[in-house]
Image 1 (cartoon, rainbow, N blue to C red):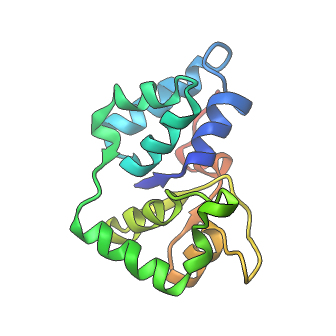
Image 2: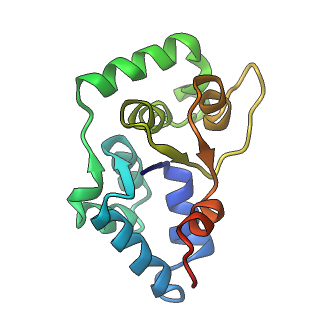
Amino acid sequence: MHSIDTSSFLDAWTRHYPQDTFSTFWEHMDRSGHSGILKVSEEVVEELKKKDDGAAIWVRKRPHMIVPTDIPIQEKVLGILKVFPRLVNAGKSRSGGDPFVIAVALVNKYTVITGEGPGKPSKPHIPDVCSAMGVRCIGLVDFIRDQKWRL
């Protein structure tokens, strides 16, 4: 099971695997959502809406993929932000969905899929927090390889 972040989803949607060219990739994504392998925090869906490029519509048509922000996830988010308050910084356009992606993984024992690399100690990114909290964190290509997709 995997919790995907906004950057990975947008990297796939707009940069690396656009639907008009890589329809097989999106068929795999759809099947992964239906089988429960791939999940999206509702906070990520909110971030996707801001981009207004169709990605949020694609996810919203697959409500089975969306993980609601329930009490256990909210509690994990608060715990993450206590330890890593700089993970989210609205003034610097730091992603507000990042702690939710990690919280979904923590609560459900999922792997995180992110397009982010490590940050600095003063500005942690998803891989830094995952490492500190014992959550497996991979990139999108690693996910594709793990799933043995052929595009």
